[in-house]
Image (cartoon, rainbow, N blue to C red; front, side):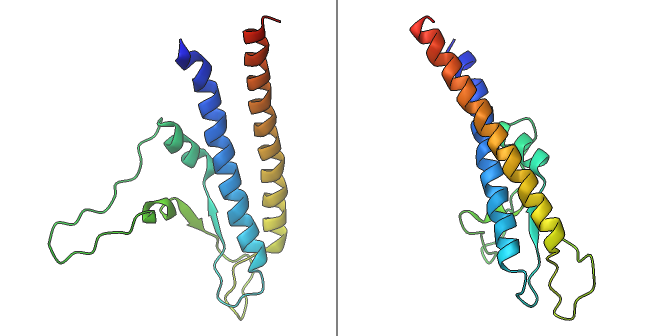
Amino acid sequence: MLDRLSDPLAFQSEALVLRAERQRLLASNIANADTPGYVARDMDFATALRQATGTQALPQSMAATHAGHLTPKTGAASETGLLYASASQTNLDRNTVDMDRERANFADNAVKYEATLRFLNGSVSTMLNAIKGQ
C-alpha cells in the first residue's frame, strides 16, 4: 500500500537529483570555457535515470584480485557515467567547450528540471488532498 504512494515520488525525486547533477556539470563546462585544455563533461540522462531507478544494471566495479592492486576511492564510481564532449572546432588551447551547445543544453535542462519539480509538487499536493479527503 505504501509503495503506491512512494514509488511515483521516488522516480520523480531521482529524476530531480539527476537533473540537478547535470545542471552542475553544464555550469562547470560554461565556467571553464576559457580554461586551456579543459574537456567538457556531460551525462547520458536516460541511462543514468534507468540505473538510478533500477531498471538497468550498474556497470561493474573494478575488482582487486591481487594484494598489490589499488582499490578505487569511495565515490569514484559516480564518475563512471560521465561522457566527454568532443570539440566542435579545433582550438589551439585544446578546450572542448562549445558555448552555443552548453547554453542550449543548460536551458533545456533547466526547463526539464522545472517540469520535474512541478510533477513532484503535483504528486505531493494530490496526496495531501487525498489525505484531507477533499
